[in-house]
Length: 192
Image 1 (tube, rainbow, N blue to C red):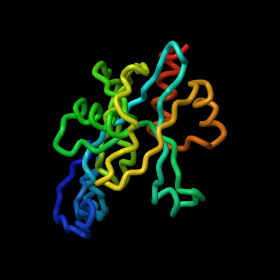
Image 2 (cartoon, rainbow, N blue to C red):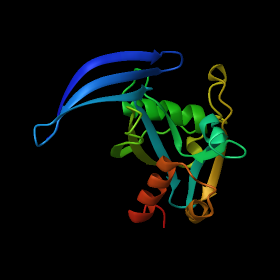
Image 3 (tube, rainbow, N blue to C red):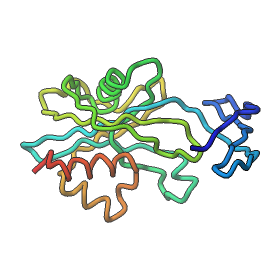
C-alpha cells in the first residue's frame, strides 16, 4: 500500500465549488519518496436515480443544457440523463427523493440503493450514490422541470426502455451515470 503525506493544500478557486492544488509525498513499495502535485475539484457528493415502469416498459429521463459538454464538442450542449443532484446537507435517500420531485415531477417513496461510485476520480472528489425506483403515473404531482431559482430548465422524457438502450449505441445518450443505470436495469431485468 502506498503511503501518502499531505504537505500543502492551496485553494485555487472557491467561486462555484472548490478547486484545490494539493502537494503530497508518496512512499512507494521500494521506499522511494515521490513529491507530487495534483488539482482536485470538490463539488460535494451526489445521488442519481433511474425511474422505471414495468407495465409500460418505460423509463423517465431528463434533458438539459450542460456547458462542459458544449465546450467539449457536444454541438447543442443538451444531454439526456437520469435525474440527479448534489446532496447539499441531505443524506443520499432524501436528496434523490427531493431531486426526483423537482426535476421529474414524480413523488417517489420506495427507492433502492444499488451502489456508489467515483465518477471522475482523477480530478473530482465526488462520490455518486445510485438508486432505482419504480414509478407509476399516479405518482406525478407536478410537471417537474427543476427549480426556477437555480435557473434549471429541465425537460422530462418518458422513453421506452428498449429505445433508451438503443440511444446508448446511437450516441444520443452519452452520460456515464445514465448508461450505468440503464445497463443495471437491463442486467437485472427490471423492465421486461
